[in-house]
Length: 217
Image 1 (cartoon, helix red, strand yellow):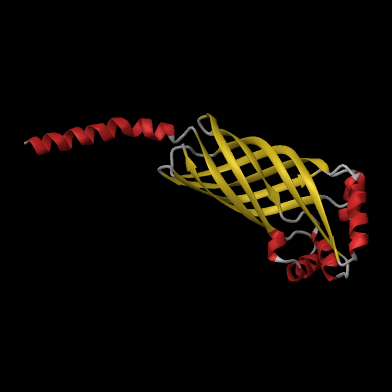
Image 2 (image 1 turned 120 degrees about the vertical axis):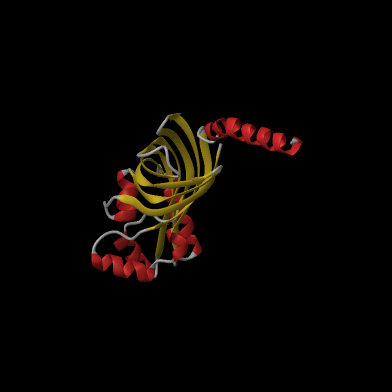
């Protein structure tokens, strides 16, 4: 009888404590996000860039914090690195050229995420973000003096640019653990000189397939 009473007390405590634990895990999350840039552009650019670009240039990394504002809505903040923001055609041309040009970007952004369902372990979502990026340009295939002069010249150019993003995906969660899988689009509004240098006036963008792993709190 004493054992039965103990089991009943434990079960009651679990039932009463369950909602508070679930509520605590709805306050937000912290996650690590990684993604692979997807090729975009003409079919020819896709084929050439896919063969010529290294996987390292296509990997993006970031860390994200999300805070619940209201049921179904979260404020999100993220810092990270975009491995390559060159358009595919330019990336392919420089890959086969004796002179190599690579452009990556560090970024910090914030925005809002809206869930399409909140009463399930599988929650689709959409999001919109905005922030700032810092472009880093690397030149290879030239002698050290020329490379130093190029980097010196770029040092006088403002490489901090506004950044905007859209995305969508699905969040899976079980208890405190969560997995986020989706798509992200980011656009860098570079200055005229930097845009002309890196992309011939084309847009500096990143299309990503992303996966995030984190903890809810």
